[in-house]
Length: 139
Image (cartoon, rainbow, N blue to C red; front, side):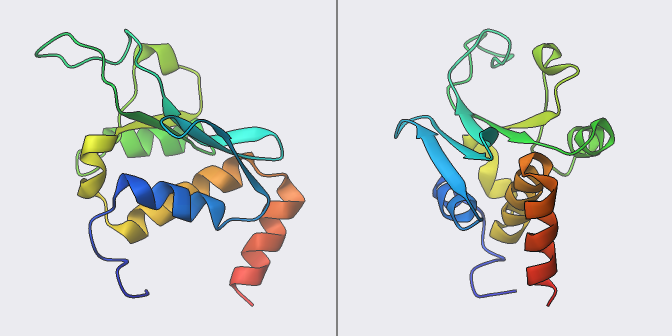
């Protein structure tokens, strides 16, 4: 683990981590970027929607970030683990992604965030590209 990987994650880390992966294209805009590989988005900052809201105020969350996952089992493992800040909403039923509020990102270490971003990339990258990336990391 490199210096700083155990510090609390920051929203800005997402851009750095995502763009460090092979063949990533950044889309969207400065406020709501999305990161794609092979024309498939793997992480994106979502506009406020009525399905993700603060239960106390009823106001839509303005800082939702979506991360793709490989399987429904992985999704459930993340959202059911109370030690993680990940969640889902009924709108996302059947969709292989988990949600995170930007305000809660500091509950993850930078290393944990890196793993989630990398796993999201692997879930959406062409299989050969993912296999090559894994092989290069373990060489």
